[in-house]
Length: 90
Image (cartoon, rainbow, N blue to C red):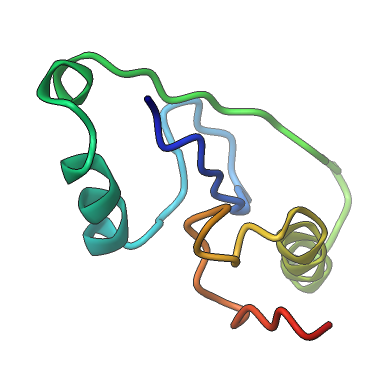
């Protein structure tokens, strides 16, 4: 059993240790539901979906929102993004 949830964030400056800024409270709520063995031994995976050496901060922010909507990571059953607000009527 794993959360299998995703989080989409932007990274303006290269850092291999950075994994975004999902809500600690939301992530902790999910992890508390896992068996204790899995709480003690889990992996986090990072995947770069898009990159550009020339985009502006505004373009990067737009791309982040595009991917959040595309992957529905703002849907609480799929991911940890809470913005933009998920609308399942779309």
